Image 1 (cartoon, one colour):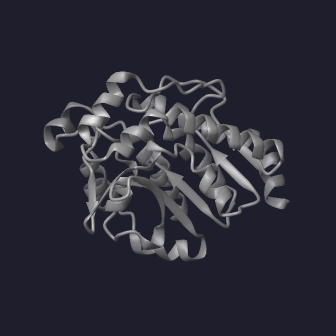
Image 2 (image 1 turned 60 degrees about the vertical axis):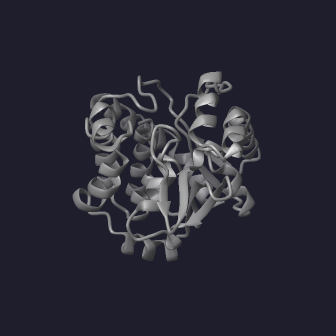
Image 3 (image 1 turned 180 degrees about the vertical axis):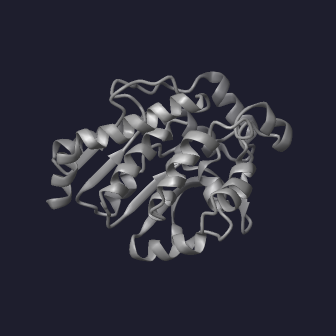
Length: 274
């Protein structure tokens, strides 16, 4: 749900005609990256403020209907193709001109991989896998391989962007500046071990997730210090968590994202001109 901040920033970027040579999305950011690449502000706003907060998306109803707390099937098999009418063919065509990658945790190798959007399936199933939280959602199978949210290891896709030798970066994250990720508690790590027998690495990755996150934040700070990056993160706090937030709070968070981008537009324009 915190992705409403991201969509506010992306909407501002669309309105100002700002484009990039490469794009990277992880977890819910992958959905909004696709909306951005389709140049569609309606997708960004409706998904992040209305559909995400719908009772069919999170809570008891999807648990009864799909056997999972988040209605991933409802979102990716109905809302995205039939309500929003997102066009995968058009998305792939756009990504041939503006390359983009999405991170997924590939259970066949127990590792986070980055897949170009041009190589994703035509029915949004790999995209579904890229946002499916472990334990909370079912593994997503595409062409015999099983996928989960790449945020198991890479909560921010900064390392992939640096590996690809991008020399200027605009980074959007959704945690406040003073946030410090703590180690996962024993209950969560135990559930991870039980939920994925035969996949010891996912359990090991989850145990050190906070270390990966802090390393990614340190890398972002270094890029900013070296004047290679602009980092946008919420300037105000709204009571929205990963799985909790009403539509009004999400709209507030969207507006904060938009306003933060506007407030720092000179930095963004300067980065584009370097």
